[in-house]
Length: 136
Image (cartoon, rainbow, N blue to C red):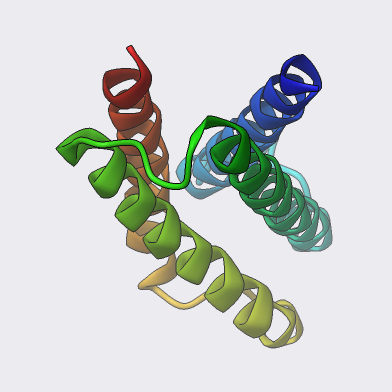
């Protein structure tokens, strides 16, 4: 059972990394002539947004089930920070999923969305780093 949960958890991490990097690539690809149309950008943003939502759902579900199997709360600062970062990333993902349909209709995300995406990517890296520290 634990092997399946770890697989699901790693799958969630892969999906989250895909969504995070995909959004960063869209944000950074402000070049001239060979870019997709704005409609394609909005479709890609939606796909990455929904991928992130699915990923965080998989991570929460599998993570909580693994916590039940390993004890309710592993000791240590690293795990506590990891959980705090997971909560923060979950809030960012929920915020984007709530607000993004309106952005798609109005021509794109606001100026603060880019820095928020960079922060979300950094938070994801921090989550993985603190998880490695918490679980050796």
